[in-house]
Figure 1 (tube, rainbow, N blue to C red):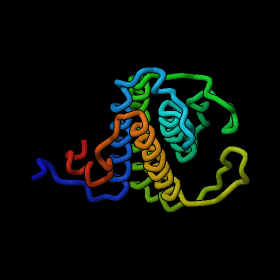
Figure 2: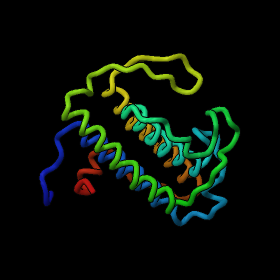
Figure 3: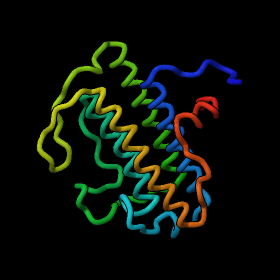
Length: 181
């Protein structure tokens, strides 16, 4: 039986789960050698390091877009999504610290928008080299959490290939079973 009431707000669940599940992947990368952490796979951004940088970097940049703030530089140091390799390298501990910085910022931003009733507003954004597109702020928030889930699944596959399988789904139900840490 849970020791506290479980979340029922969809955005709180999505954001809390996203933070927790990403932290779980980062924690599973801590014992890896540097070579394993940077080993290239023919999936997603290519390595555990690059995929985690992509997940956290997307959270940073979407928080800036949604919050109508100037975009921070890409976390991986690339100038575009077509650059061949990241210019910066981080440890799992550094990624953990970055996640602990951006996830609460993003959740606070979403809570403010929800409280002000502006999640339903539409905005037009230009992403990378693509033409401008218009969608709701709520859809952008959900995109961030779905994006994280997609790339965490890639990380789980990479970890399996490294002989370190994640014997869990890391889904919202497991997050609630873990009492929404």
